[in-house]
Length: 267
Image (tube, rainbow, N blue to C red; front, side, top):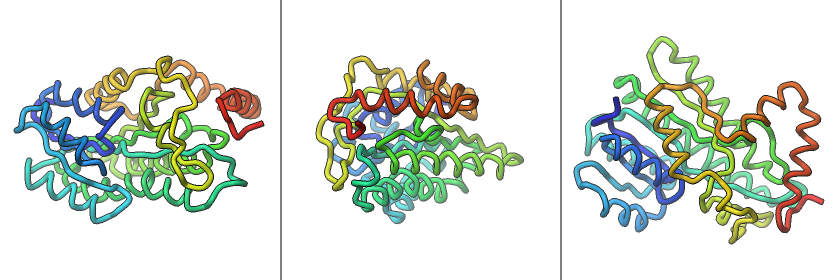
């Protein structure tokens, strides 16, 4: 089903993005990988058949970079069948202590990056009756303490893509909201703290989390089946369902769960 499809993946220099790029290539796709760290993209590209991959340096918070990403894809492959909006950053700090530039940074990358890329890719995706994917989080269904900016950005992506799906019900555009639970990646190492600097190390045991490769398999399978929504991990699914019926209980469970992190800002 995916052979020779053209797929764009943002945030593809590591983690879920890079694993998804490999999985799409395994399925016979032509893949455009985008990220700010072009050297990491080039290293990955060197391991792939030249005709099946294109690396593009792209800061998704910059509208012109997103426009350039789409234009280079069309110049190289002539079409777009799948757009995976995966680029994102996280944070960990109490809102009362937070420099507001942190929330702006998260919204620029996570939300506006999705909006910019989708806007310029949309005419081509409508032509191909293709797929738009937004990688959010359980934090896009339920606010996570000490992650105000992260949760806000993921809620915003959910609302944006959910509305886009409804607008194009008659156009056969596939829109998928993809929500991993905690997945092994470097997103927590690069998470921003109250003053906007990077956290530097993960507060969690990454070895106990779902691997990026496994997560990518779910993502690609969801595109194949044109699913509207995927929530991963048992705890993620349980939290979303429980929150519909007992939201105040989930508030307390979340608080107690998140405060157990090493050096948690929650007391």
